[in-house]
Image (cartoon, rainbow, N blue to C red):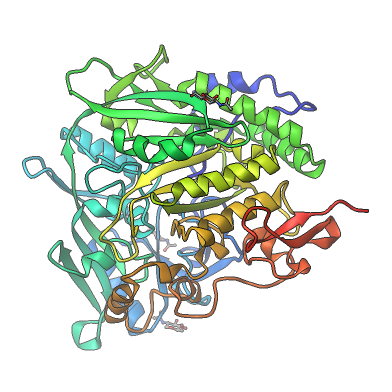
Length: 587
Ligand SMILES: *[C@@H]1O[C@H](CO)[C@@H](O)[C@H](O)[C@H]1NC(C)=O
Ligand SMILES: *[C@@H]1O[C@H](CO)[C@@H](O)[C@H](O)[C@H]1NC(C)=O
Ligand SMILES: *[C@@H]1O[C@H](CO)[C@@H](O)[C@H](O)[C@H]1NC(C)=O
């Protein structure tokens, strides 16, 4: 999820009013655009993600979109496509995955949207389980559970995801406790519709519970097995949490990271490497009768005035084109300080923040996303990354590093910062590096060991040939994480190169592929892209001019960077095996 800075200042462009805007903006925003657009009815359509662009900037075309409202209707759609050997993919309400998982092969494929497959099927308070259709959003799930006195203990922080979509990409919250922070590890039961042989009516519903090995494939499947219709989750009785943000310097971050995660159930860390600062979220369960009705309405996920977004983007564009690194660093300090004094959007009572700790019910603290709330009106305010307006446009590099080597990774990044102290101010404009804890998963494509997930968001130019400031530092960190320490890419984020060789990092990958062959032998739910991600076809990387700038390749020659703008392919500074686009001073 993007963690977007709303406060930017440069020494040239002082945006005085933005603090006021952010703190007092309560205007509702336009709901995000439907990611599917059709030229006639539900045919001849394109689909994109909520950011309006896949990593390779390709346009995805489909012949038709279907909106089943029940499992029976879903079975009919899958059966018709299978009968006709039509390629298909599942699409969700908002389409938040960055890689093009949603795109069926070719241009004649079908999309099956879960937009109206969004009902709560059953809540069993005694058993503490919840059965929902796959298009139910996290927001809906949290709210409905709360009405029954129940809570999902760990989940992503952004509530605009659907349960099917977040499971399909292995999305998670942050904890090292219990079975961990991955939502898919709380699945008890799941119903998935897959292609089938003619004698079976071309489509089949598989009902999987924890006794079925296949659940380990279906609960994190990148959408290549079929369409999940229903999910039963293990939930808990409602509980309360107590949250406190503590800011420190980052000198001993590498030593703190493991212990901190074990000490606090909902711990996470936000790291601002160029400022040498860390914000620890000290976050624990407290007795349900503890006084407090706190609310987390994360500021970067609130509606933002579109004119402000345009100013921020213009400022960032200018800082990039004029190499105004100081401006970025000033902006990054302002961003961090603003978020700290506003407690990142925490309030003690839903209205104001009066001090730590903030204590409240799980459903009010675990996730947010008020920018999704809507007035059916024009573009007054939006989510900051809404592609209809001039606003944020970024890359997201996200990988998890095993706890046993995470200290080394952190120290490598710190060494890079020693060499280029301002190198990561640009990342801090997007609220720094978010570090969340994840645990070993039973999912075949899930986490292979207890780890820390690093979420790094940074400027992306609208022009694919335009490098970014400290291009080399960002590329080196990406390669250190993914290759030197064998980081596992977040399946729903990242640029192409993060998936290079990824499948070999999963010891049960073959089990996954076996299930895939059994459920969808013709690969109707697969595409060249998912085959590449799964190591079944050529490389995920694309070699062409400027490919390294967009993360489509690791540079091996200067043309993969942009020599005309002074960027050449060179070894890394700390990780010599890295190959990064480095800006060389003109002689
Ligand atoms: C497109 O699909 C929606 C949802 O099923 C349906 O309500 C609508 O009538 C369809 N549009 C056309 C032109 O068929
Ligand atoms: C079957 O597939 C072909 C080729 O993709 C397509 O032209 C045709 O319209 C499809 N038929 C149906 C009923 O969708
Ligand atoms: C960081 O903080 C620790 C105390 O927590 C202190 O001992 C150390 O000197 C600080 N380092 C820097 C570089 O400020």
